[in-house]
Image 1: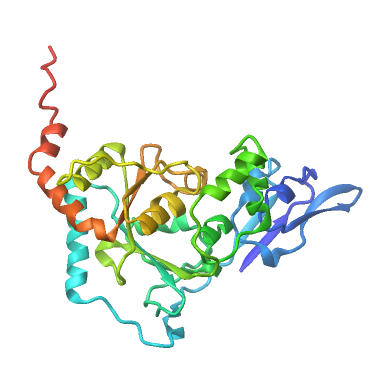
Image 2 (image 1 turned 60 degrees about the vertical axis):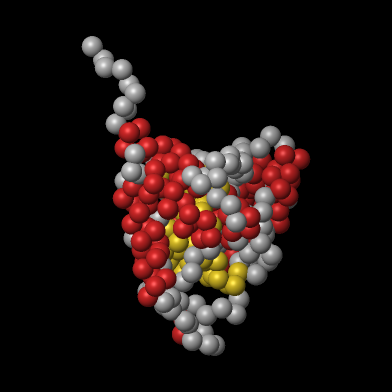
Length: 326
């Protein structure tokens, strides 16, 4: 449950919460002789915290009462079919290779976009609403999360991934101008129109797990690591072909579009620098980039990485061509 409190003593009626809320929760009213904000439609709140982040007076508190973790697979109309032991072993082996050769600090994350009609696995929902990018970052630490629309807190990413429709203020581009992300409404509309989006309500849930603990066939595997590791992943993916990549990056909607939907829809790996949302709402370091790898590309990529790990990677990291410093 989401609760919103406004400290009307602190509130100066600046109207920022009204302008920045993507679902129009707030309105200004007159109370004790001055304009103050109130949550007129608290039931519409996504807990995205845009209002809190933009309130210079720190007058707004958005709180979530943690609920017990739920398991939604009881709602299945047909039983869920678990992965075979061979599939589990293969995904665990891919994860082990990625972590060992690259010396990754964080675990690779398996992403599955579950359409309507597909049985849900026995994976807990989060106890509070989360952004999709926050869920990915939690999964890299070893946790698994299943999120239907009501567990997502970002209306933007949730609509992009096909769980819901897009709120009018986001569809128009108005909020992006107020956030200072773009210079004009024309630029905002172009950004919205050019990004990938799955059809509304085509996806029932997002599933993120550590790759080594996957419970469903992943659509995409996400790796979060410094640029040097991303270089080796790029080399590994073309170890047998030598071809160059063309990546799609804008730093808008990074995890939902760039790390997930580009690999999901094209079958090609994609790099991302991250975006305003994922960096403002998580502990992602300044040195971290993101890569989305379609499952179909993973076997050859890992094989190439193992080959690079025998000589090229250790030689490079040992700086073998660096002249002695005297």
